Image (cartoon, rainbow, N blue to C red; front, side):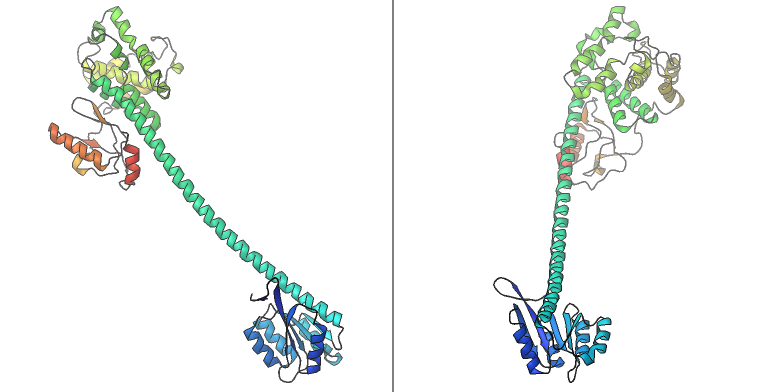
Length: 444
């Protein structure tokens, strides 16, 4: 709404229309105390010309005028300028038509001639008050809209900030997690590089544990944990003399067998400083417990971690197949038959049945669906640990490939005259933000 303003308060406009000059002069005298801009015209046509140029807040019109009558004038004003407060001056003879006009909503108030100045002033002030209320309501609505828009903008910025911070936290957590996993894998390399400990055996046991856990419906994180525990299951052997574990177990003396079994206590001691590896430590510590409670520490089934029960099956299966148990390698079928003798005695029957009933579960993992380094792209995710020819871990499962790691793998192939068979995680997202990849992998 356009209003005239002085230095302090808004000035409202009142338009008076009457074809008699003495009436206009009387109105002017009556309203001299009001702080309004008073405009006087002598016809309806002139009134409409004024209103086309200026915003009029209150209009007072005589009922009977030549040309456009007061009722007709205010009807036009009601259509074109509905916010203008409309008052009509009428004589006694015009009262019926005036009331009719009021009832049709074209006129807000009417005053009879001769009027009382007090009534005229009160009517105008009533009209101005209504205009002021509309002005204030409009101002508040605009203010509310601006504040709502500002609030939306603040909320949008806040949401973006939260999203950015969440993403940064997620990236940091992923980086920490990958760093921890990389440090964990160092333990396997320490084991594998020892000429008296077989890294290939550890990989086979770990892969079988992973398969059994997946077949049992165990969640992905616990499956990873169990597989890693199997990978470093012989960590405690690093604290023993080779003669205590190099010969087949059946050919060890009673004391050597006790020393061999003490590897679990040594592994617990090695892992003690790493509190986050406590579940892994317990799996390794209780790996020689028997399902029926007749094992090393006489633990009953419910006290033996699930990962330890699965690991025991995987470990002894490959000990039998590789000859590490008796000194004679035996066929997978015979190894399964030997394990079956101790179902629900040494081994948890539920997990043992997964091995016994699946003819392919003991086959090497990831025979199919592997690719070479020439097909790798940044953003792809390793589906399995990547080892060199000496069973030393080069990259852990879950590693997000970058241009740098792909280049190093290809360089390794050229220098060592070998090719990698690489399995990727299914449904990998090759569109991962490169900066995020670098952040997640920079410590791997």
